Image (cartoon, rainbow, N blue to C red; front, side, top):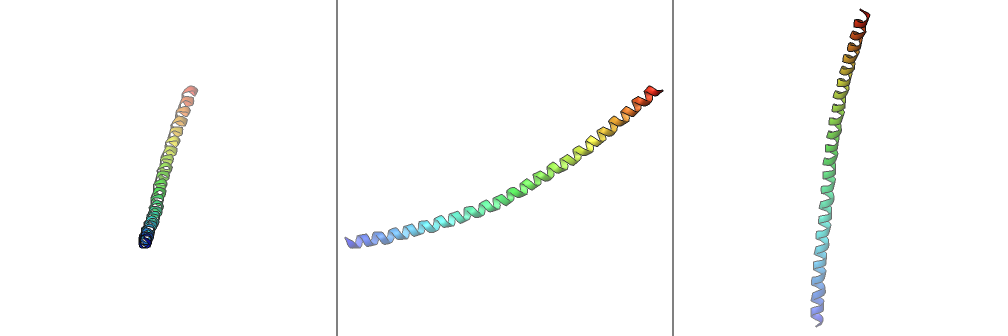
Length: 83
């Protein structure tokens, strides 16, 4: 009877140790994958910010062009009224 208890304790300890090692390995793998995915997310976020910045530059150019057109039209109307 004592032999069965000793064998159970030994095998139980081996199984618990194996589970602990596997769990630790899985946690390490998950931590590394989160780190790499967060850096990929940072890259993606940086690209989005750059696209927004470029879009704002184009928008600024368009607004300046519209301001020029409106200013030219206003000058033309003033010149027509003076004549």
